[in-house]
Image (cartoon, rainbow, N blue to C red; front, side, top):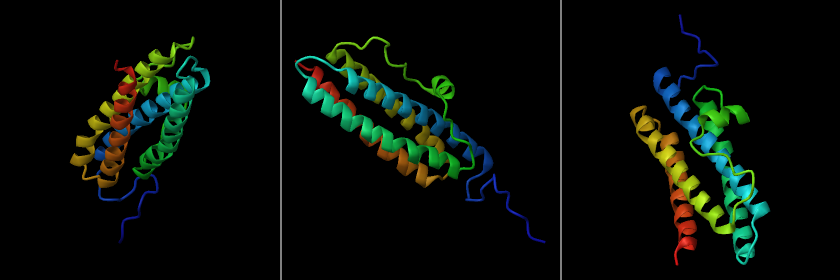
Length: 164
């Protein structure tokens, strides 16, 4: 008699406990990514000053990249058999990044906050890597490596604007 597969519990070669731990870490990454997306988009709308054109365009490229990143992260969580968080309340609890200031800061403070946000997302992604490695989850490891590359590079580019 063959054992029937449970639709909510995928049989992909990663145990239930590992899938749960990986999904938990990816949920934090999703929350951080979405929070950084919102902040970056907010700063795109509200940046002013002599660097307006440069920052407006840079922030647009960055929020577009972040927007395109949230779906693959959420879909990986679903592939692991877990529900992806998707509410502001859930993201607020899971994210390591504070919400955007209610009053838009000056341009260079926006840049500084985005450096911190990108570094925070990189730390979150890096924290999930050993969990994914322990679970023998190469697709998640690949996703995390891609996100690390983007956030470390973005933080470096933003930091460069703060140097005198």
